Length: 223
Image 1 (cartoon, one colour):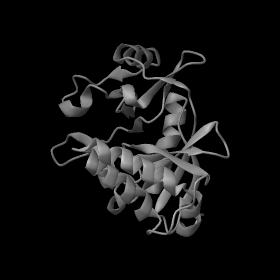
Image 2 (tube, helix red, strand yellow; image 1 turned 60 degrees about the vertical axis):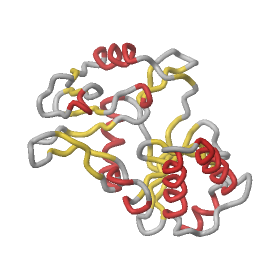
Image 3 (cartoon, one colour; image 1 turned 90 degrees about the vertical axis):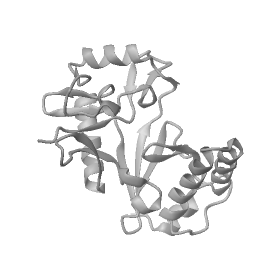
Image 4 (cartoon, helix red, strand yellow; image 1 turned 60 degrees about the horizontal axis):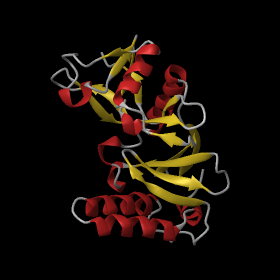
């Protein structure tokens, strides 16, 4: 376990400042994105001073459920920080899972640390790729995950559809218990669902041309 102070010292503070400045200059809705990434990092470490230029973890950006970092000690991977709802991670918590609401519709729910790790286990088992556990920060204030870095570009929707179908997944595009906002990128194979299967959550490798699912929500379909 890393204390909040220990993790803060590992984060390249100037890299976070540059990302906040970049987002702020874009104006509009990006101002909120700048506030969120600041809150996600600084809130997780309880506003302990961050490390100096050249510290181990350099901020890449903040997307979806996590803040992404380059690892200067291991360029073959990226590191993802997930955290508490009150620290800017919203309803995702430590990672979204699938739940069924009072109307019987499937939606995203806020996951615990244990559920986040189970989701990654399911991703490895059913998709062949995912994250591995790295560390917990403080009194479960943050969760660090590591994932192999894949150099590549975003595939097309058609390529993703073909890949999922080839892997034996069935589309939920017409499922009545999945909201229209989710169903176009939702799949099922047996009792397991794979949601959010869009272009931002896959990478087509420059090396082997294969598709790698980097951030799908893989979870047992709720009864």
